[in-house]
Amino acid sequence: MRVVCVADTHCRHAAVNVPNGDVLIFAGDACMSGSLAELVSFAEWLKALPHKEKIVVAGNHDWCLARPATRRAAENVIAEAGAWYLRDYAVTITGGLKVYGSPWQPEFCDWAFNLPRGAQLAEKWALIPDDVDILVTHGPPFGVLDTTDDVSKYPGGWLGHHKGCEDLAARVKKLKRLKLHAFGHIHEGYGVDERNDVIAVNAAVGYHLEGSPVVIDV
View 1: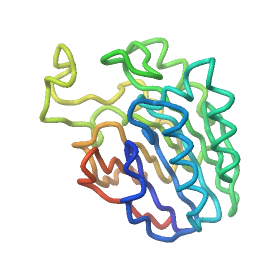
View 2 (view 1 turned 30 degrees about the horizontal axis):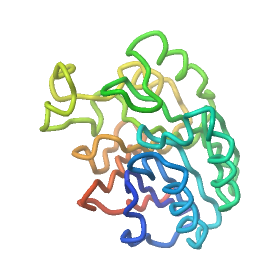
View 3 (view 1 turned 180 degrees about the vertical axis):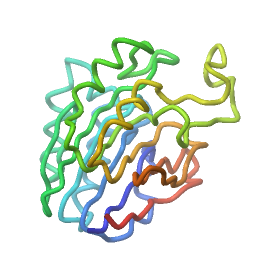
View 4 (view 1 turned 30 degrees about the vertical axis):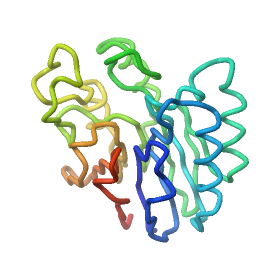
């Protein structure tokens, strides 16, 4: 099964060349300011893509999916584009693969889907099923494709240059069936890493489209 991973298009989706495949994973930050109009534009682009299965997780810029006043309308926009929107939710796709998605990340600057490091994030990651095959989160696990050279973006220079979540990393290690973990959020961490039979993909294309969609055969 060919899986195409992309994240952090920040309203520049129309300029992204998306390879064909069986499954498209979008790991958050379709928007810039987070308006519903931005998400509608993204959904129109998403709907036109040929992939049989489409998975979407929200990111910290996707405010319309976080705010109570717009959440239901925003979720409907994604559903009408023929995609699964996963907010702490699992779905079984073609081929019998279980996919789980979650938007949360350690808090920094007052963005959407922020939670403090520690117990609150650990509670979210505890919801991930033990038998998940593909995990989609917006943020990375600690120590995996999560480094940035711009400490000024993260007040206090949290934990050196590693910005991923420690509790997410701990949960990932316990997922014995996990084949692929797709995420974004830390643009400078773009790339692919494989360890312990799990392929990790930071698919953040970035504000200036420095990266491109990543194709993985699962």
